[in-house]
Amino acid sequence: MQFKILEIMTKEKTNPKNSTFTKFDNEGNIRHDYNSLADSITALPVLSSSVIQLVSFTEKSNETDIEDVLSIINDDQSLTSHVLRVANASKYAKMVKSDTLTDAIQLLGLEKVRDVALASSFMGNLLDPYSKGFNWEAFWKHSISVGIISSLIAKFLGREDFEKFYTAGLLHDMGKVGAFCIDEKNMLLVAKKAREHKISMIQAELMTEAPRHDLLGHAICKRWNLPEYIGQVCRNHHNISRNQRNISMTDSHNDFIDVVILANYLVHKIGLGYSGHNSTENGIEEVLEYLEINNQDLKKIEELAKNEIKQSGGMMELLG
Ligand SMILES: [Fe+2]
Ligand SMILES: [Fe+2]
Figure 1 (cartoon, protein in one colour):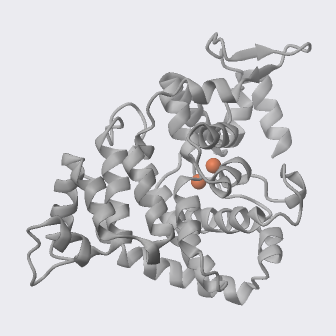
Figure 2: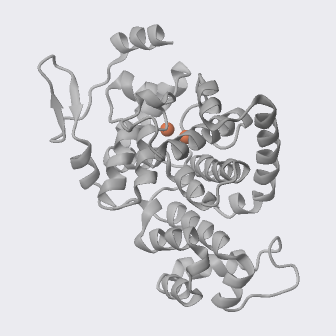
């Protein structure tokens, strides 16, 4: 694979946009300034401040006051109507009609409300689901599936903080959204190369010398003051070996990274959504070893994942 990429690289280097944030080193290689790139993003649809607040509420749900949640949602008209619409959708409320936000939140539960908020924030803002040459609805389905399966694996491993794994999984690829916000054309070109050559987005980014979505995602996390575990997952979710990561082999963030890598692998294997490419990661055995998951457990997890995704089907359909 390495050889194939090098071969393509020599033929297909794209012309990266002449940007203030792109420098050349002594050998003429492109060096992107990820912090400045992240600073240049004025709005990232997936991360409005109300959504960030809701996400952090769900991570410590036993301390959450429903009044706080209400006040966040009340400030956002389109979010309020989305939550009410979902609460009244037949899958969640066959008998009860939710006229007020309080009813709706009680009926749906905080986690579903967070999902609605994330979905409506992501799909309702900037990214028209099918236009602009990228299927953002399928990308969202990919992200949400990685979130669901990450939290499922965390539960399987007995982690009490499984909601954090959901958030980390959901946001692992947000560098791709960031790349789109910075330079739409270039990001779409990278996705096209990934499809054409049947390689992953990260390989296509290296091939075209475009900004890498893992490093960009990490810079965005720092810029938005998101918790360190999310930043580390963004940065390292393509570094399968712990010794390729920028943290020590025993750092506790490795667990988040390993789980999201496994979830990402399963989502590609099962064929859920679309992340810009169709190739699966090699060398997943190493991650299984770190997590002490044997092949029998992996089969169990895959079955559980398929079921869980089926049950959350309603959420995916809300995006239209
Ligand atoms: Fe990725
Ligand atoms: Fe992904």
